[in-house]
Amino acid sequence: MGKQAATNVQAGAEGTGSIRAVEALPHSPPLELVNSPKREKILEGMLEAVGAEGYDSTSVRTVLDRTGLYRQAFYDNFADKDGCYLAALEMGIVRFEALVARAAASQETWRGKLRAGLGALLDELDAEPDFGRGVIVGVHAAGPEALARRAEALKRAADFIDLARDDAEESEEPPQIAPEGIVAGIHAIVHSRLSTGATDGFRALLPEFMYFAVLPYFGADAASAEMQAARA
Amino acid sequence: MDSRGVLPYIGWAMESPQLPRAYAVRSERERLLEAMVKTAAAKGYEATTVADVVEFAGVSPEAFDEMFESKEACFLEAYDAVFDVLVAHVTAAFEAAAGEPWPEQIAAGLGALVGLLAMEADIARMAMVEVTAAGDDARERYRAMLTRFTPFLEQGRTYSGQGGELPADTARFAIGGATSMIFDEVRAGRGPELKRILPDLVFAVLMPYLGPEAAEDEMRRVTREG
Image (cartoon, rainbow over all chains, first blue to last red; front, side, top):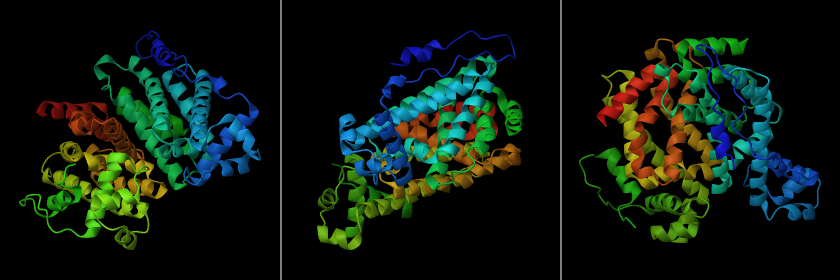
């Protein structure tokens, strides 16, 4: 699906020092994955249940209780809990990516897009911590296919961040591993907060996330300046 | 299957480097813990049953029930034992390099970590991958264990000369980057070749403290010296 789309976002760089416009996130899965209202309600209920109670404690029954729907509605759409979670995970990832892409679209530069996109994601986590926990923490208990979805999403995030490479001075380009490290590091901080229930104030993490993302491409001074700017 | 066992090796590594992998008389408890490491690594935590563990250990189910409340309790205890060894191993390497600049100490500690994980496929899979699928308590334990590496990293604040300026979550960011890379490799079955990613790990850990140039210098040194 998205492989070609991901490599298509390679527009030409502008002159020295300027940061060229970035289209959007490399790609997101198709939105038609989520169409019927009942189905969407179940998917949301699944993520919130997993986020609130943990994957193992969540059953088809808990999801139905949350949504007020009947068993039939569940089994019309899904074979079992695992199948439903996998679909819910995909929906959650789509939602996060759409959120980021929409916020980023209002900005011209890589840094602006990253700041807006990450900020939107953090706002969403502040607003819906259970949903976020259902996606980001719940995935671990949900088997290899779910982990593969997660790996793909993290890879797309890394590709997006690595667009900074086009603006970095050639002599200062970081090693290939840099974007993967940024995404994994930021992910670990978010994951840890969601797991320990320290779920207020995600937004306050934006300055340090910007620092970590800018640092490998543009150096310590630029990263510090960016951290200050994001604090303002 | 390899009859050497993980925990005898662990005991050997921690207590007496001179001794061969002594197959000392082992308690049923040790045998069960070792069996848990082996079966969880081979089958995955979720598919592992108490019956598997008991059979592998050659211990009676009653003995298991007497010692452990559940499969999870056994896993957690085995996990603690395994992680103690990892931390001791990394600490020893870090301290052995005490005369060297901090980046080289970090590289030495990471080298010891990937060396041990590459050699002990079961430990690697259990400590870095299966633990994330073994329930909330296990994941909590995993997170707590990883913070035991924080003091080594935080020395980077002093070394970098801009300690107070660095974000509060710098250690978590660095550890998160490195463990994610290890997770991916081990999960993909490339645990035995883990040393290949040592330069990447060195970069991921040093970069947030020192910036890209110094991190890349150390990465190159590690690559050069193999």
